[in-house]
Image 1 (tube, one colour):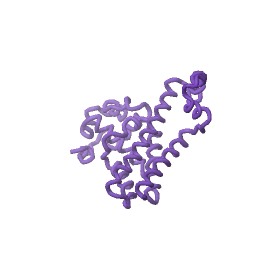
Image 2 (cartoon, helix red, strand yellow; image 1 turned 180 degrees about the vertical axis):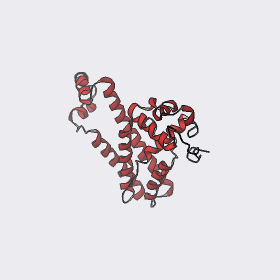
Image 3 (cartoon, one colour; image 1 turned 60 degrees about the vertical axis):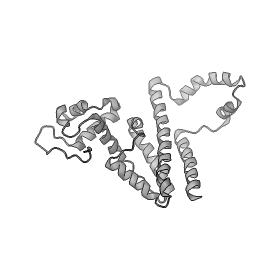
Image 4 (spheres, one colour; image 1 turned 90 degrees about the horizontal axis):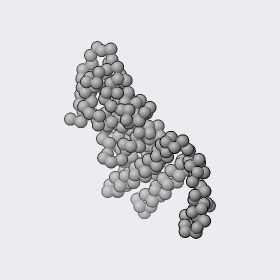
Length: 226
């Protein structure tokens, strides 16, 4: 029986009352503050003032705990809009916003589908908006948007982590490596790349994300509407 179907132990008087919801909220606070390495049944129990063994009545493994924490964040991802394009854009942007609020999520999204109730509700909202799309294309379309978002947000979170690790923001990093690139481009070996770096518009992260999403949605529209 999966954790979402398994009943919780009956409540009992205690200096540290427990429930699955309290456990998940505590784990979410730890993850947001200090990353996934801060999340364990022992650390969550300590945060709740309870003995670690009491948590096993609610959650059997750390993997179950992470499944529950991820699903709690999926409650923040509620795509809205009229028509498939607005809903897919809302899906992409709300997922990105959730990852920026919960940086650790970048390490857990992707892979096997999330099957918790909030994740399923998010999926239902998206699939319902694609009701007029060929049934065989629905999951590939959603998968394409998810893949774009996952790649984009992982790149953005990697940049944020690099800033913390090096003490240099993006502009400082570019200033440090700029002279090297200029010397390299001066050799004439990379003329196309040099032209883009020197002359093309340099978009910020928000602009880059939205433009890339436009490209993707335009392609989806050409396929499903053509």
